[in-house]
Length: 116
Image (cartoon, rainbow, N blue to C red; front, top):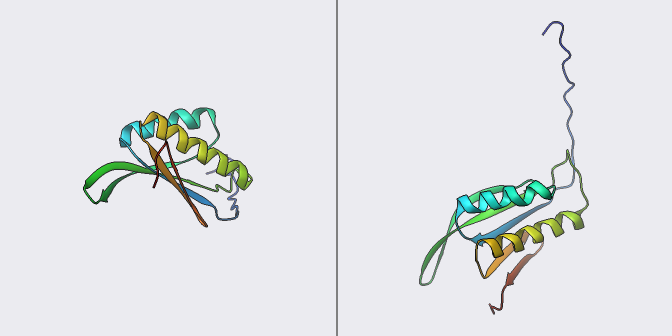
């Protein structure tokens, strides 16, 4: 590429961190809601459709995954708070009673007036 500046390749390494939000609801609606949430809260997520199979039936839902993105480092408490806020937002807007957030070392279940 004669005459053009070529950006230098940069590699960044950060600590591994992830959170998976598991919630029932429509995949396409969840994508829209994640776009809305991430539009005003700096967060990057993937939204993967899934099917929950349990005694008595099955229902559709999503797994919303967030990772530590080394290009935009952030402290663990801030990332965790954003993910919990997103989980609450999805639970409410997808009209669900509960969700789980899976971290590397623990899983948080939260239900609206439900007992496990």
